[in-house]
Length: 420
Image 1 (cartoon, rainbow, N blue to C red):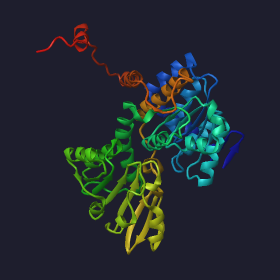
Image 2: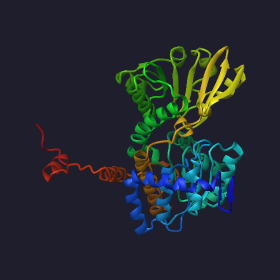
Image 3: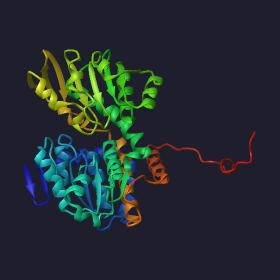
Image 4: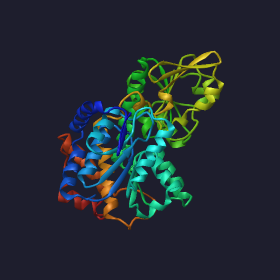
């Protein structure tokens, strides 16, 4: 481990490769680079300390550079023990960024690093999963009076924040970046769909064609995973607790059933719900010999791994990110320790997808700074015009032009008098 005053990373000798990967990410993040150019001119975050708990990937490094260009003093750590790209962490440290992260963090290091970010006294927090916000509220409430706002990246974090708001426990404004159309309808759907399948393939090299894939949860992430698995020739089953989402799945051509029934049929299982114990030992005992379990929800507790450990006769690693459990004489394979498989064994979402997500984070920080002291201590959404601005930036980066309304069309949309 390489350690300095403001960093702790696995290996600084990886710096060159990290910078190459960041450069490749920038090539496909044109929308975010446009925000960066404006931030360099206007310095909307000048003098503001921003603390991040995000996946430390090449795309996140471009976000860090964007915030820094806007004048922010940035400190970052990971939000998942297996998601850090060590070469990127090294590159950030070499750039002088405050960074504490490595792939395979112990639980102790994970929370120590979050503590390091908190010690920088962030005035804006950026979170993926709400661990940073939760730690501040539970253990460092004295910092809250100086916090302008926070920004949350993912569905799981939004669920936790809404619970905090319902309990009157949320003490500073939180902007639900995940709820931007340009985030959850792009990142969750296209990004999670592709990167989850990518992670499973890298971990197993399994053939999807002809397999039965069980997807638990049919929100934006589940829709994306189901569609990509179907595109590879898999037979896809959906499990859900939400009636409307289950209905959508049926209308999209998928079979919907209870997990206890799907457990007997599935070859590959993917959880993407944001809830806990979606696949329990009672389900695992009904599975085929050789069943593969993966999770792309934020936390590893979507799979009941503690109970699996206790019930299993043995456990061993058979290849990187693939562990074999013997349960009642059958082999059950768990990928990536049950953590985000798209980041544990793969590289997360493609750069194009993260460009719009991180435009949302950047503009949310700017929005919070501009409205300092004016926002309620609630879970908030960015104004729709900012969301549409992000979409326009991405279209421009892709070289795509769209039509404008004529004055006649605009007048028609704003009138009620003209009809049949």
